[in-house]
Length: 579
Image (cartoon, rainbow, N blue to C red; front, side):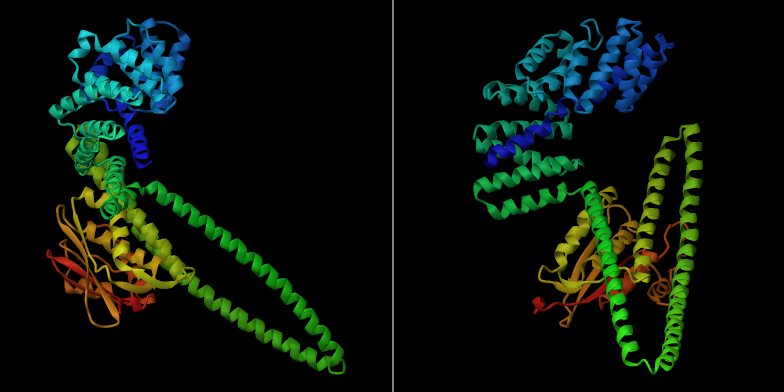
């Protein structure tokens, strides 16, 4: 059962690559030819727009303008191009039946008719019309021109190999998949080579040739470490988990299984979790309001019963009691008004602080974006691509900084208005650090920063889990922000032989002087000001961390030197599991 499941997943991942792993040479040839056609048919606006959107991979727009051009029915050659655009667009949108219809309408006089046949073979393979797919692949491979095009031959080899594999004609499949692998080993394209390894591994695994299959699964897994595609990383580790389970090596299988689950987590899944949490929060608020309404009704009934009893038993003292009651109500109302006034003053102070932060720091971020975009426009006009790339990365960093600021503002506001609830429990520190590392994996990879999780696996602390994650995310985000490329960030614990667990976050970044450290640790300021104006930041994240650490009964200390890095030392109460 495990082999069958693994084989299916691998094949389904590899099918789309048959069409969309376009070689740079292929794109250049198509683009060069189309540029000539644009000049030749410069009056055909719909055709020009369709080809433009085609290269931008705006498939919907390309399909629409191709249809408009086809409705004019002016030139047979332009019609072929439009059917080609529409077929490729439908394939990209996984509308395989529509893609098949469009490709079949391309005439055999079309410039890229051989390439269209290859693409049609890929579409038929997706539709599981295996015999028809083989027909088109074998027809096009006979053409002399195709034999000179490595990228086209590779698509045919891979398509035929996968098709014969689905038909369980394993000898024919092996012949073509080996040719595909040999060709890709010469070109040294890591992504294409990964696909070739995976296809051969699946082929052998389907035949229960475990020794050969495992060799290629291992090659694919090792190569996936050098590829940034998270889907491929997930697939390779998932396959290795299945391999180890079949071997009976369940301990190693569990390691691969955890790795595959980590790669499978994505920003999309996180958004789904956040949406679910938001829904649960709204539901909880609605339930709370319902309870309040019930309590109001109950209070009214109790008031009625009390007043009835009061007036029936103390009729003679009605005036006196009435006077006392009126006085008591006035006192009560005065206290309520005073309490509300104090709360309103507190909320106004919080509001003023929030407006101050937003007006100052978001204005800084927006101004930085404005200045950077002005430079970006100049770079585009002068075609200074080096500076253009630098400015784009700078804009991305500014946007990320603004997003972090808004996220911290939300949590800080909730904390100040006492809407952020704390529920302490025993937490396994090593696992939490591992989760935080995964969340920031893309940022770590982008700056080539090594991450070391040296936290003791026996460390259990008694804290609120959500606030702990906010603290660790903020501190890791700062460490990445102020660390140079190719540096290292370490999380480790220090045994103190006390009731507190000490966690150290160490980087080799910019560091800070003692005055800056003192400002960060002060409790009487909302923000810690930075002397370097080129670094966008507010210190709000640090203020948020301090308050949440304090709420959890912990402490924070900082050790740092300029240009030598920083140690953030956190202490949290241990749980009884630590002994």
